[in-house]
Length: 418
Image 1 (cartoon, rainbow, N blue to C red):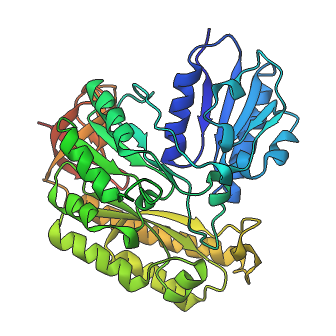
Image 2: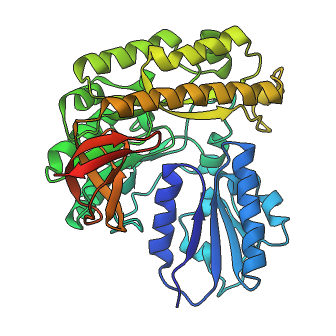
């Protein structure tokens, strides 16, 4: 009997759903390799195909199942790979029977993702990494940004009822987890489909009140323009909400944002960061930025580059624009691939400089570290602001250890455990 072998690509929601699959399938006699794919970029799809082919070479007798967003959007392309035994769309990802081979099933198991109206609150007891836990509170997206294919892989926005979310977090805290990350496709749209239309801030406030033993609550990614007053209060007033916000900004030029069909302006993004920082100065921001969106001129790009300083961004996820078939942006006048690559490199260099400056500012400061690995006489984890950090002694995985930062490298803080 072996545990299911699951390879996960992409977002934290995929990480969570892979863990749900792991619990649902448990140990089994079959040699099954599951690939939980991402469709955000063409590169993500390419990497999944490469991993599938490599697994077939290494495990010729394994049953290979492909699921996730790329499988939902284009199941036929994966079914056409000779290495693949079955394709399971996101529409059937929550059905354990779709991943079994003890009964005859079609090669493609997928249906209209837009027909889904609910997202189940899966109760699972723990995660493979044993340190932080992820809880899905929302799935899908009602927005149609011109560059994004994900709504066609995830469907429309669907929320998990607050009671189910609280029960899941209580169970995880009872099993020793000290940090929970709320995940979703469009987190700040939470509740629009639920009775009474609660908002994300209402849910966060309810979690903080009803799970008082939870030390750390983290948000995976938010759309700042949709942040409601209760959410702003929780972020700025409750120390258990971690001082790290990852923002879906995408660009810093207003014309680019308009052509992306985003709902915020450059000025909105800057004002949000300033308001948060004024109320809670220790908050650190990350952001997604796309380089070389169609029609982007050098001047437009420079405004995105300047956003790093104007919003005091520390952690950047930079994506060279990747035209996804079926999206409006794929039909717009494209920026040359070499220019996209060069602009992405400049964004990353500026992001690296901002991160180094932040790391240097932490030298001599106190941190509380969630330990994720402990080996070789050292422990590694992340601070409250999500800075990677290495401790000078081993520690129990999942524990929170006070420490003082002694030095900083470009990639991590080095600290003495107190």
